[in-house]
Image (cartoon, rainbow, N blue to C red; front, side, top):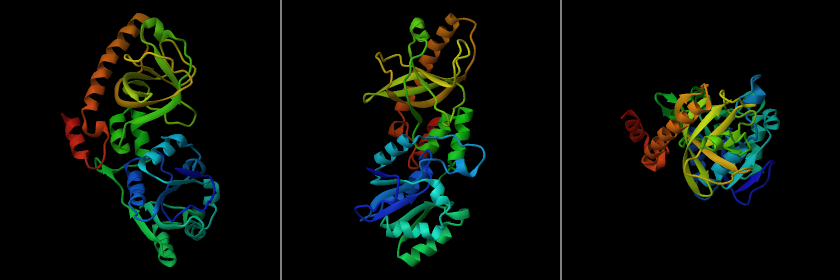
Length: 323
């Protein structure tokens, strides 16, 4: 996959999906799927390295995915070309000029976007303007309607709200996969080793979404293998921590992971974070949570598509969750 941080003429004509695509949820996947389903055109994505809302609002919006995660997911989807363009420049551009640049310099012959996509100076660019410009320039336009789950559209805002409540199951349904983060493993106090439950410690970087503090059933992906785990997210109230941290105990893994980026999936919320009277009580609770997490992981692996939620298996997934 080719990735550019500036306007670059590609090797062939493009079908370009436009959007911020934070999280790459089912709604985003529908838009990008339209670009992928374009015979004779290379599938491309035009997006931004930062969330536009961080420049448009006073309150920063936490990330659901890092740029590295987004690029990896886009490559897995089959996207050929990605433009990571600075939003500040696009924001001040006349929307008509932006469309002409896509057509003339990026060889875009098909534009794909969501129903509520806006762009350009004062947000004047919308699907109506795109329709007019595409007719003038001889381009095709594909506007995707929202994907709805439980009677409401899937959105990055809704997914953030789910994660902040600990509802990682609903977040997974909207993402089409479990919520995952991929941070470097750092040295901790090694208290887990003394308790017989060594953990991998992964601090949350500034600006990234913080799921509800507490204990989760999880999966970790290490060297092509998947291990079930129990993850505590929070500030370790029993022993203390400098900042928000993910601590994952992997009962079936042993090895040195310091400095490596380990993807961790959150499957289900088990309990809130709490303080224990002593380390013996903490150890007993970790072991209980580990057994609960193992059962959840086994149930997850028996689901269709290994637990991934697509539009096609949404009804089956809902029926399974209600049992």
